[in-house]
Image (tube, rainbow over all chains, first blue to last red):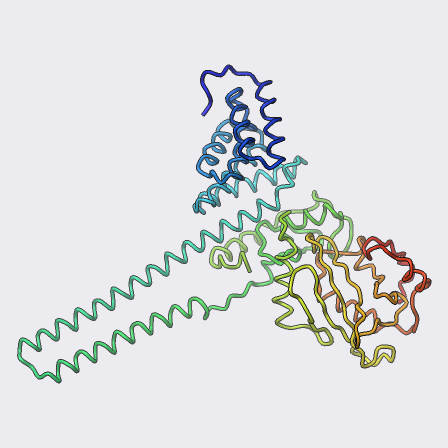
Length: 294
Length: 155
C-alpha cells in the first residue's frame, strides 16, 4: 500500500490530507482518495490518513479496499476516536458486502467506543445515531440470513419427502405389474399416493403460513423507545425510571437538557445504562429481526 | 442524525393512528411525512364548540420529534377557527406544549390533539387573544418563531 520509495515526511502528508479534505468536501471522492493515498505514502504510521482514505473509498463503493484500510488503521492502535471511526467504516463496508455477522461485531465495537467518547466528552460522541442505526441493520440482516436458511432447509425437506413417497409408489406399482395385477389396482395405488403427496404439500404450506403470518408480528411496548418508537439497542434510564435509547435521548438533550417526562433538569451524566432491559431487547431482536424496521 | 429520523417515527405513528384514534379525533390526510391534516371535535356540551368540527394542520421538520411540529387550525368551508383566548383568528395556537420550551419528544400527534381538545373543553371565554386583529394583520413569522408569553395558565 505505502510506496516504499517515498521518504517519510509527516508535514507533506498533512499537506496532501488538507487538499484531500477540500476535494472530499467538494464531493470529488476520486481526487480525495488519491490525495489521501499520497498522504499515506508520506506518513504510513498516521492512522487518521487511513480512516480518511477509507471514508473516500466507502463513498466510491470500493468496499474490499475500504476494509483493508480500516483494518490497517485499527492495527496501528489509534486513539479511541479514530478507532471508533475505523470500526464504523469497517462495519459499513462489511455490511455492504453482505457479511452481517462481521459487520455486527465491528459496529458493536464502534458503538462501545462511541459511548466511551460520550463519557469522555469527545466530539466522536456525535456519531451515536448513525452507529446505532447500523448495529440494528446488521442485526436485521443476520436474522434475515437465518430465516432464509431455515426456509431453504424446510423447502428441501418437503421435496425429499415427496420424492420418497414417489419412489415408494413406483416400487409398489412395479411389484403389481410384475405380478400381472389388475389395471384398476395400479390406478388405485397411484391415486392413493397422489393424495398423500398433495396432503404433504398442503401441510408444509400450512406450517409455513403459521411461521410467517400465524405468529403475529407485534413489538411489545417495553422494548420501544418513546422518542423514536423503535426497538432500543442501548437503553438508558433517567431518574423517573423511564428508559430511552441512548442515541435518541442524547439527541433530545442536545436541544434541551430536561427530562422528557417531567421537564426537570437532566444531563448526559445522569443517564444510567439499563442492562437487564438491554439484554431483554437483544433477545427479542434475536428472535424477531423484522422488528428493526417495524 | 439520519435524515429519515422524522419519517421513521411518523410512519410508526401513522400505523398506530390507522388502527385506532381516541373519540373526537380523525385523520384526514397523511400522504407524506411533512404535512398531516386531522379533524377534532369537543366531546362535552361546551356551548362554544357544540356540534362543530375543527381542522388541524401539522407540519413536521426532518428532526421531529426532537423539534416540535408546527400545529395550526385551518379554515375551511365547514371548518371554522375555534374561539379561544389563546387561538388567533388566523389559526395560530398559543400553547406551551407546542413551543420550543414546552415541547417534549415523548409527545405525539395523538397526544397533541388530545391536549387541544381539553384546551377547548376547559374554556368558557368567547374571545380571541388580546391584539388579535393587529397580530393577524402584521404577523409574517412562522408560529414556531414567535415567542408567545404564556402569562395566563388558567385557560
